[in-house]
Image: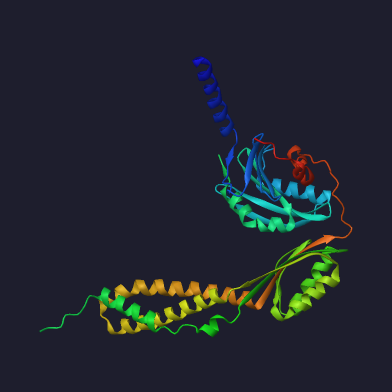
Length: 152
Length: 211
């Protein structure tokens, strides 16, 4: 019985340390949001419909931030995404490019932000979206989250 | 009995208090004079977003306004307060207004506080200058640091006041354009697999997974 408990505890500790260590970034999430981990990415929700996701991809072929931001911009504008704004951002130890799009969904318009940054062999990607007015309401929080992202 | 000069630090404190008490502050009527800022956020569906953006920007500039950001699908404008109604009329004529949100803030008290702070520091500065003229070498040195700090603080206050006065004079309008013919984007295949996974509709469709 004791053996089983010790074994279970050991497995739990092992799993939690592997799980927390497998995400190659950290970020500060304000208390007003709920967050969940999903296959190495971090998904953030507000109670009223704002959603954001931070994830990583392998930087292959090995290129820099401006290359990947340009590739993403070309792709999405080609698909018909209307680009509202493009700006540079910086976080704890990353610098990148933010693209904000205005997307129709149902009979409403949503702001959809995609941000890309590269550090060594990893591409860091942030997506955030909400109905336009709601997105503007969380503008400061989005900036806080982005500026807190730290690549490990 | 010989008169002993009090230490310069004590003189300084007495002097600061006297300045604070005699500074000419804004009167109550001046404080309650409304100082309003207007921020408007709007979305408008138009047949040609770029053309509409250019036309609205041109009208804004002809009335003494200017733009701070501009792209094919958005423009951020600053225009004088007297053009408030006219600008709304111009925008509404261009297409279908999907949203028009006005945020007004009364900054009277905040402004009055800044103006009073600047006034009291101006008085302080002129008194410092008078003290420097009458003090000796060591007194001048001890005042120098205070003087630099004071001038820096005054410049910061002036900057904040200028920014506020600009906000009282100009309305800020952030305008997003949506094409009337716009439809849901069509998915295309990228050469890079991770870019294929960036999709607004997939992103919005995903639900909380309970982890």
